[in-house]
Amino acid sequence: MFEKLRQAFSGVASAVREKRLSPEELDKVASDFEISLIESDVAQTVAEKLTQTVQKSLEGTRVDRSADPSEVVGERLAVTLESAFDKAGTVDLLQNISEKKRSGEPYSILFLGINGTGKTTTVAKFASYLKKNRVSVVCAAGDTHRPGAIEQLTEHADRLAVKIVSQRYGADPAAVGRDGILYAKAHHVDCLLIDSAGRMQTNQNLMEEMAKIVRVVKPDFRIFVADALTGNDAVSQAELFNRHVGFDGVILTKADADVRGGAALSIVYSTGKPVLFLGVGQGYDDLAPFDTKKFLDSLLK
Image (tube, rainbow, N blue to C red; front, side):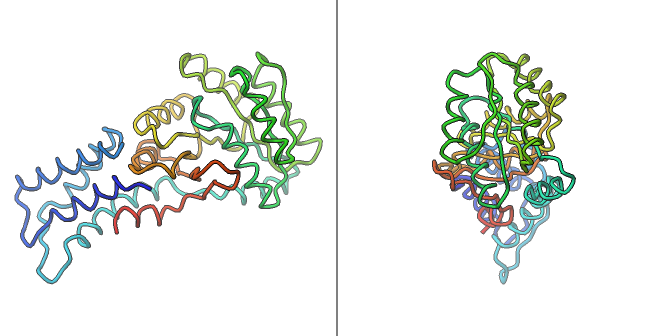
């Protein structure tokens, strides 16, 4: 995973030699770095900001013969990237659910994102993850617009032996979410997972619908689901949802096929929200917790 992005960082590291970089040389290094980032599906605005930060940190850099230039530059890059990921923070959802359980109330999670990102399948994977961690779960089929969406989630729920709350197509998704809350309370279920629609062809209506779900259900946590392979599109979608609805964390699907890696970096950098999990396959177990340290190490080493 993330091979192209790794190459972009190693390229700027190897550009530093046994001399102080002149302004002209530094401009060339920075320009090449920015192009490499964009080619790695890093959003252009993020690539520009990251390049400016790295260029400033490299001004006047001189590497002695006894030092490894890649290590020196790698340290500078690490500081830059770690600050962005530290700002996004980390989230322990299992701990959050456990704390809410003590109050006697179910913990509710709303899944956001456009159609085609694997959102419904991700809801099922997350349900499986919770069950394996001894958390009881119920799903609410809040995508009442996409044909087959309710049946898709129902099939996943049946396979996982998870209860599903649903209504007819065309029903108010907020009402479905509210039904899910009432069911979880009545049956003492630990966590409610709410699927939602993602019709990007009607952005304004979609944002209003998501905002209504948030107002009615008041979810404890909102997860944005993005397809890692869509690169810049994933970033623009994340910014749109974050601006109009808001979310607390991200799950990137199809990360096992992502050789570029720009989506993870860009979403964290542009929204300040943490990546929680990576979808790394088609099975219910193919949901891997995102390890920031491993991700950064893979780019810089």
